Length: 486
Length: 98
Image (cartoon, rainbow over the protein chains, first blue to last red):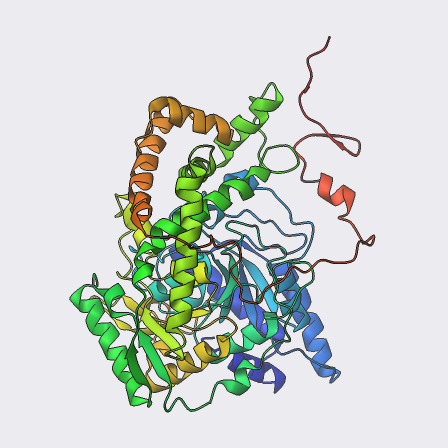
């Protein structure tokens, strides 16, 4: 069943496999393997079987079938699917049932995708390890004692272990690309505003973007075409027509310039630096030309991101008040206690900490010093990366500075924050960016190459990633534990 | 900037989170470290730089016409409410009885 979405769709259309069989095999595989990795929080067996029945019927009757007919897709548990539970990986929302469909999942279902379940995540998408879920940690399919990265930990692990060819995640500071890199999958964050966030539980509204995991850039391009469209229910949605990423994939890259921000990469270990250099050689071999660019302001990414992201999170999470839905403390005797006890019981430590940090940087007396300063530094970063992008077509850098670490091995919280050093810049500047598998460390941990482009130049990012993928074999590498047919 | 115990407790109050004493100590420690780290940006020269308030180039707000549209189904929405009376959400008394 280790077929890409493209192949699986073809097999279904040509009649070699029925949708019912795809669904049956998918759930069999999940049941065999998921106990090892903890990727899923809920499974949509009934829903998927029903949809499969409809698809098989449609095919028999030679009716029109969508672009994703027969493709099983997992959804991060902060994206609503009407009638299904949305927990956001939090105890606060353990029993919350979504009352409407997100635009993304509606678009997928309109193209006849099979939604198969919701995936584990760091609580409210805060964290870079997959160990901040209120339910259980997710394990890395390449090494079960390691974390898969986060916050879209389950979506990354599910695709990495080949439980499904496609999953949805959300990326606020790297939450798709970072676990993509750590699990050897293709993680793509489109331009800010390209994919509707209607039905995505908000974390940092000026940063959040829905993205995808796949094991083929071609699949990524297909998914980006399906979900990358204007939505009137999201005020930040870009009102431009959908783009033809698949058609653009095969463009020759001769004469294309790739910008490398050398000074920003100074802290890399020699092993990670070597892997990055090897990836650059492949791109040069494709006719691309390397030019040095200056992204010196990006060294402030983490501070800027944590100030702005936490400020926005503290505001967005104010809605979790214990009144209308979710956790309500049984100990509460008055309204004030409904708020403070429900939030104390429902939120995990990391979430509480970010609400505290966000409230601090927005509080009277500190707002100018921290929040407004961070907004200015963000403006400076945007200015610099725009300038850099006049000198090159795309920017490349490693997705992460370190490979996946041992679960429970991070003792200093700042260490986990620093894992986002190379990914937060694309969120702060609203840029499209992809992490594509680009090799392994000596102990067989995946390394991710990040390719970043200008706003609304998602096609350039995908084309470069596709060319790189074709010149190497890393996207096809499957974790040995999960390489069997079942 | 070194946040005092009182300031941390005040922040917790603003956040409407009832921390245990022990948890407040832990969160205070991490918060102080995070703030200390983030303070590196205070030294960045941002003279004359306008704060970034929108990310997209050529962005403009999309406002819809002020027309009545479908609303969320009330019964379905109420199914998520922790406590309710009929079609209303129930909360502890807000005003003390006179």
